[in-house]
Image 1 (cartoon, one colour):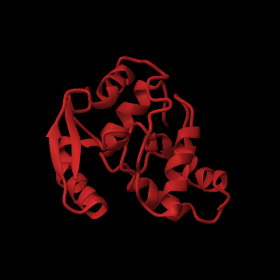
Image 2: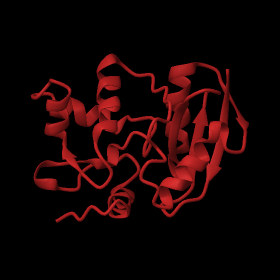
Image 3: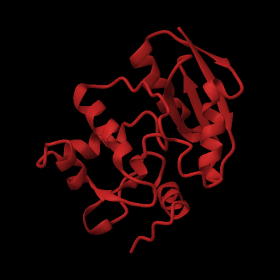
Image 4: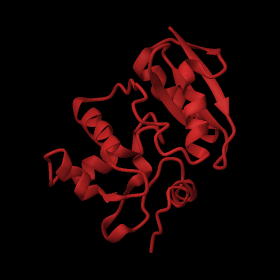
Length: 167
């Protein structure tokens, strides 16, 4: 299977963008390329990357986010794979508005599984399209900065970029 691949520079490092030709199927950081490739292989089996500049306009939309465009990531079509529960968690991330955060417990409540906050946290950590599905907007209890597959410094930067001030 052919997957379209692009790299863009950002304030938080090089970002990898992968499309299946229609939908965004991976968005990760260059220092996590091996993890991303492993997850894509689990999902697609054998695949290869075709380098393409700005597949489906996704690279431009991500760059616009970094330039402060609050709506550039709205309605990006995504293909996440994953279990039904993971998909439910990942799609619920789209309901978290720019410049706001919610706790893992609150996200669990939003999907109707209020006691599943640990499972929600685990699903959140496996989000294949970071930033586009804003897992960085989920924080620990009492707005504590916890867990981010791309590293806490990136999470802190992304939240500050959106105007979130953490304790």
